[in-house]
Amino acid sequence: MPTVMLRKVTIVAEALLEDRLLRELRALGARGFTIGEVRGEGSRGIRAVDWEGRNVRIETIVGPAVADRILEHVSANYFEDYAVIAWVDDVGVVRGDKYA
Amino acid sequence: MPTVMLRKVTIVAEALLEDRLLRELRALGARGFTIGEVRGEGSRGIRAVDWEGRNVRIETIVGPAVADRILEHVSANYFEDYAVIAWVDDVGVVRGDKYA
Amino acid sequence: MPTVMLRKVTIVAEALLEDRLLRELRALGARGFTIGEVRGEGSRGIRAVDWEGRNVRIETIVGPAVADRILEHVSANYFEDYAVIAWVDDVGVVRGDKYA
Image (tube, rainbow over all chains, first blue to last red; front, side):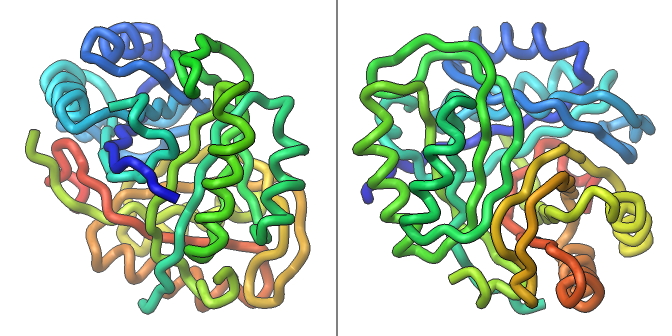
């Protein structure tokens, strides 16, 4: 089965940031999201904020240029003040030509 | 720690498709599933259906042949009519000999 | 956007194991967790226990040495008696120097 290699960006953040993040991610070129309610626990972010509580886990599958823009944006705008974690990995997507 | 490289297939689909999908995935050779309730937002699928609402995120860890069969099946049977996304990636599985 | 390659360990286990697992994972060097409520279905673990029910999906991003310790620990202490699955993959983490 041929799949298209794309990048999956996952962001875990405080639940209250969801609307703002989705709006910004759309502006950066993301077109679809999967959003799950999760709990976070530990120390995260550049200030090593301790946090524990309601988080959202946002996944979006995008091409490499959009992935880069999203990671830059999250790094520049969230890591100083929020307990946010963001990572990227490569996935093979069915009918992936629609997402790039 | 030696792990076995296997394929993790993730399918995000409307919640009402869950029972049917699990039945079909089992028939194609999948033996275990992790299912989470998520929300979807955006445009997806070959018709770029706009959707927003209750979705399930189904993960199954399988060998490469079963992964291929699942991706073919989902592509052939769901992409025309449903807002479905499916992707695959390689994971190292503890005691993975049981899953292949 | 430069990211740091780290290992993401995901463990899916019966919900009642959560507190014990998190305590042990912390002792092994993990510092942050994302925890989602999921359902499990199928046969898993070395005894191929059939299970169905409330599970937790625990993700932690760590360096390779901590990942190895976690996988060894889970393999040695859970696979005989519990329906547990654990896998690892490589992810590129924003500001990942904090997690290694």
